[in-house]
Length: 126
Image (tube, rainbow, N blue to C red; front, side, top):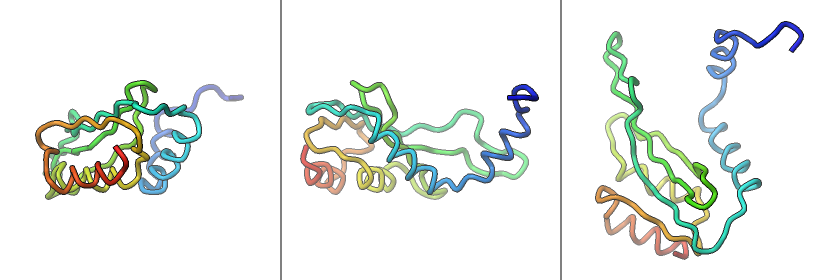
C-alpha cells in the first residue's frame, strides 16, 4: 500500500460495515470452491463461547458460536452465532442446512445428541 499498512481503525470501519449474513454466505461459497472434499471426511461440530465477548458496560451476554470443522481440510467449513436466548440445539440444525455433509462422518458432543439433529444428519447422506 502506498501509505503503509492501514490502521486498526480502518480495519474496524471496514469490518463494521460488513453484513454478517452476506459474509457467511460468501465465506461458505469460497470454502466450497477451495476445499477439496473427500468422501469420509470427518466434520466436527461444536459450540464455543468467544473469550472476552461479554460486554460489562452494556450488560450484553457473551457471544456463543457453533462451528463445523473439516478435519482433512483443516478448515472451518461453517460457523453460526446462536441467538441471545438460545443454545447450540437450535443453531446446529441451521448450520447443517448450509453444509454439504453427504458421505462425511459428523461428530458432535452430547449437547447435539437430539433426535431432530440426528434425523437432519442422516437426511444429509451421512
